Length: 243
Image: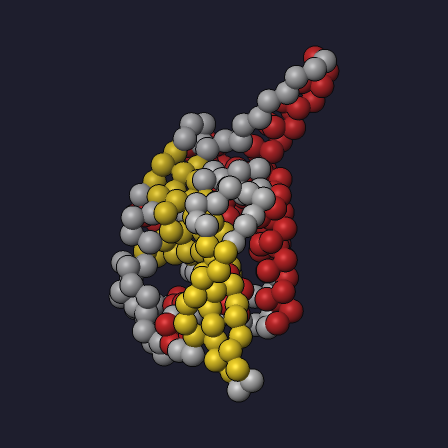
């Protein structure tokens, strides 16, 4: 399959972030503690050989050097702070080189997600989004917000869209205000999905009335992503095994 030049740049960027980029690195582990609950008790450390000796990076800082951002987990205010800071940093490093964002998220806080979305649109570099595992709720909006022809999904990943939810208590007037705000937010999200998928707002509103799940192929057909990535392209090649 022939790829557009944008596809080629995106895939070449992914290839450049592959194993060859870490030829002088190796993996080690150290104790890791955090205020949030984590599945692992150890954070991988990359030991890199330099003329001045070895330098240690945590795995996410090492990936950031390759312009890779990992957005794994719920979309929270804490994640927003980290992701937006990384986007702004990478723009300052090189405003003309693409950024790769790997997404595996069940969604989360709408305002936090919209802060990431706005930053993605604000920075100058093209942003290549790659879905692994799942991109649900706000995660799916960030997936489809990648640069045109640079939105990818792995073969067994899933995408889910739905309308925002919320609740309120207190005086009737306060509940009415909150309900109106949720309706406005839903309308804005519908507009964003319509803009990036090419679908009509009415169609977006209809499918988002309930949880709307899609396979990788269905996500392509709906316009959420552009290509399925089965294999990382080899370094120096602008193509790969793409369905």
